[in-house]
Image (cartoon, rainbow, N blue to C red; front, side, top):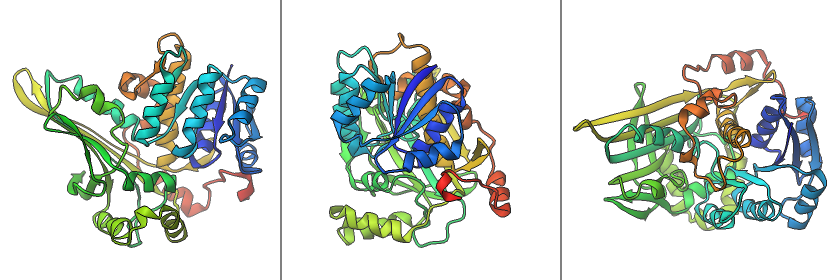
Length: 387
């Protein structure tokens, strides 16, 4: 069995720890700085090979001491993006494999620098976007002789929106604000450029339903760097229900809350509810030439909440945890194949979908399971303290 340290017992860390421990191939150390938080998750899972620890990962000395005492071979950061650099430094010093979910461009660049010359793997951006969307788009790109454009679109949405934002807080509030407030990497006319967040608003129709999409930061990952000399245009946009972007422009730009993110976080968390009844929409479109003809290929999927270990987990929890668990599983199963900084597009789509964790991305899901379990009050509890 392989020992893995998972940092953060929040929405995503809770499922990551459960998936790895339930597989029977990993002994998981789940750590959180909040007293009792990791223990609540561990008690709810009720799994062997899953232990709780109280640990402040921002304290590099404390984190290093934990690593030396408990000897994990890999660390998974389910922490907010601003915590990841400290974790990556400890991973480098202690020769651990490193995986995170960050959407932050600056953090990813710093991790890349730390990874130089390392035999261990440093794989940031292992979630949904960045993460799986880059893997899916890269598979389509490989089908073309030459490229014109690559569009990446992802959205985690409530199934039944009924507030003015038409949105629910399905994952990290800090992460959402970061995506909405930071500059966005794109390729325009063959050049890498920064574009403004909440701009580039467009309509997109999927399965007959109309959505909007707009620029957000971080979702392109390293895919732009990989193909900057081969594609004329490449961009990432977040999918939302029509009208959401206008409301967020008012909050972030009109009311200047992009410069007071603490206040914006409190407003959102006080007014916008969480939900288990969400849907994740994944859309990649590649246009280019095949056999001398201009063609387009698409990867389109909708992922709904699913049951894991007898409990209902939201679609964003499922897709994010499945993404990082499948990448970790592939790396640790073939440890000599990778080393140093590893971009998400280095993993093949078929390998992810065939992986025991990646199978949660399978096509054909519906909202029936979540609807029935909600109606019967049988969703289960993700924390023992919920009971």
